[in-house]
Image (cartoon, rainbow, N blue to C red; front, side, top):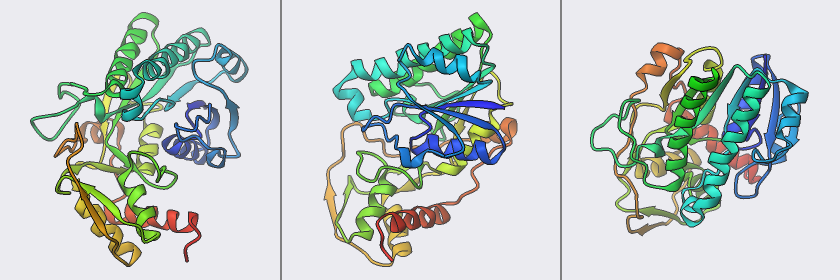
Length: 311
């Protein structure tokens, strides 16, 4: 089938594109290559059709008219919590108005379904673990708020216009192509710093835990949702928490040397423990994470080792 992937030049989106092409689908990418968004031409699969375009652009309708996609994997977003806090109007413009532009064109040109990349950030601080699809959402950032609002727009569009959707709420995604110079992505950041013998910063006591899921597993979840999970929401993660200290020790073991650790206080809004129950995705999408943490750290470290030209 023909699939439109928004944000298909970005970290997660480019892996979704690769998985779709490997599965024999025809892929169209829309990405504006915004410097703060992670989209890079070097990530674009040469077998895909590429349009440099913002999802808010009125010319998006030309892409739909020309390409006639059957399904959309929507990954284009303003994804930075910090940028969303500093500039909530921009965050809402991209994540809400961009989505509405996409949905209007999807309805106009007969798209069957949208697979939407949501986030664990929609939950905020949660008192009971594990988090699942029924856990109450209390987002604590504009980013988390716009992601949650997007889910409601998708439900409205299905009820009003019959456009099907599947919502995927990701844990902490990591792997090759993630930005090691950004504010988030501790595994990418640590990989680069340890390889370059630079100090790493560990906030709080380092025992705070999040649920880390390898990017190719996330790509497989998008693939699984093309023809399954209509009108449903799924948590996509590994199902267990891993501490920052454990990540550091795992990367040190993989890379072969330690670096200086600089301790820092707890960051505002940091959550001490989050992990997910992904049994619904297993039961209904036939999906579960396949790449364990040790293998994922090795693959990620090897990518940055090659990227940095380190033997």
